Amino acid sequence: MGTVQTKENRGIRKFIGDKSFYKMVLAIAVPIMIQNGITNFVGLLDNIMIGQIGTEQMSGVAIVNQLFFVYNLCLFGGVSGAGIFTAQYFGQKNEEGIRQTVRFKIWMVIVITALTVALFLISGSTLIELYLQGEGTAESAASTLYYGEQYLWIMLIGLPPFMMVQVYASTLRECGQTVLPMKAGVVAVFVNLILNYILIYGKFGFPALGVQGAALATIISRYVEAAIVLIHTHRHKTENPFVNGLYASLKVPGALTGKILVKGSPLLFNETLWAAGMAMLAQCYSVRGLNVVAALNISNTINNVFNIVFIALGDSVAIIVGQLLGAGKMAEARDTDNKMIAFSVFCCTCVAAVMLLMAPLFPMLYNTNAEARELAKYFIMITAIFMPQNAFLHASYFTLRSGGQTIITFLFDSVFIWCISVTIAFTLSHFTTLPVIAIYTLVQIGDWIKCLIGFILVKKGVWLQNIVA
Image (cartoon, rainbow, N blue to C red; front, side, top):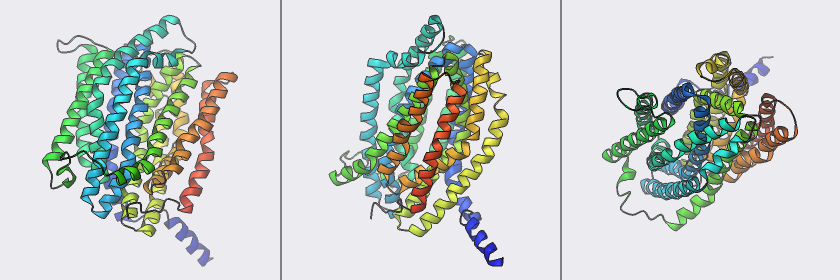
């Protein structure tokens, strides 16, 4: 009996760290949580402010933000491929390697942003209209399109500073510096919040600009954030030696470019296709009517606030495990990863309980109809129930990515969402009369297959690789 007990304890202890372990993880994760938390909380307040104007304004902005979500994740995927090398070069203390990965990131975000601007200028209105095919009046759809277009054209001006923040903030985090991006993000979101109040409602003598005011507030805050991050990084060259001679040349060695493209292209395609898959899921749900668009917007806004826990812990897996792999500490990397995944699932189980309690209350903050509020409540509850599952999936994804297994992550993430999740949503929304809440739940249940695949891949250790040796 005593031997069995010892084995059980050993099995459990494999997933539980000591005090110093949690201090190390939280030192990386908490600043990311704070930045993302404040960003999403202010996004929530923005959303409520726009939601006070009317359902069409809120839905128009929500649709455009869904489209920008695809761009944001394209950028994330574009810098993440190089970021795998940045984290491992940092583990090696190779400053020139870090510098070259930053140059690669700059080229990548310029190309992605230029293509995005061209796409939105040519087809922006058509993309918004894809979400206006469901039940609802023609007047409501036309009004939603009008407000969406107003928001879109102004938001394009904010893309250049946003792309540069992604380059610098990702590099700083991969080098273990999470505080500066957090501080800049905090300042930016408060600038955004204050300007939203002034420009949306027309306070202190300013005209009431509605959704245009919301867009102006966002782009001004992005320029503020970029100024803080870039100026501070370049003024503190001792802490950030990679900026020394960074712009002396923007050439990236062909061999490194090839390596990053081999490892990074699947990440770029993955993030792009995954985000496009999420946009397609939203479009499938929208077939059930404009109230679904409004309800999903309300639900996603509060979900984003609660999701910061597993997102920050997933980012921490990529940073901490990536550095251990770069230093050649394979056994420590595996042990650390087990504990981090378990910690993420535990934290998100606690967060999900709070989210369930808030589900009936949050939709009441919006100036919308009773059906949209009721749908939003159920969307929030379902998301809360499946949050521990999503925490495991997110940590598994970043585990595989930290060792450069980008082909596997591509199959694990974006191929899965298109082949399984979108297929379920499209089939059920177009060929059955099931209510949207049932469809939404069945899509989440489909992720059980992904959980099994993730568990097997992480356990087998296919990600235990040093790619910069």
